[in-house]
Image (cartoon, one colour):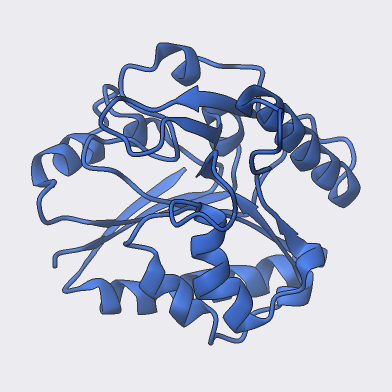
Length: 239
């Protein structure tokens, strides 16, 4: 695995570079095998990136969109990662709904654990259709973020059960007390670490100490546990 760390003066510069990276990778993958798979995340840092990506020339008709994680809320909720991506990318780029695979939102009675099992089924079936024979899907690109506490996706420090999960690709987790929404659905390290490429988009200001430890590989922080088959790229905004 090749690891690269790049720092940018601000989010605009970071977003421009991230769009160029993503579009180039999509082009290569579509030329090689006819499609491109990408898993997206939430958070404020990725919004400028999504807005720019919506204007980029991308093979959306050959791109399959997944979610790295989401809060277990309705799609219309302000805390929904599905809503964030829809508002800033999907609607603006007019991406076909048949290419969009969000984590299930709450129904009338189904608990979050059931929704996680359903999403795992959806992910497995998609990749079985795209590339039969793969036991663990290999996503072309995961767009990852990092919280102030070093969490990534909905994998939080100290959640031993989630961090040690080996069989499940998707699981239901409960975020710490300081998180606004406790019930979450997240990809596990088993799935994320089988990705071809991972692109971290994060801000340095206010989290310098944690970021330094993560980049040095401190396993206390889930963000430091992510690896990929080909490239792991960190794009960091100084401001």
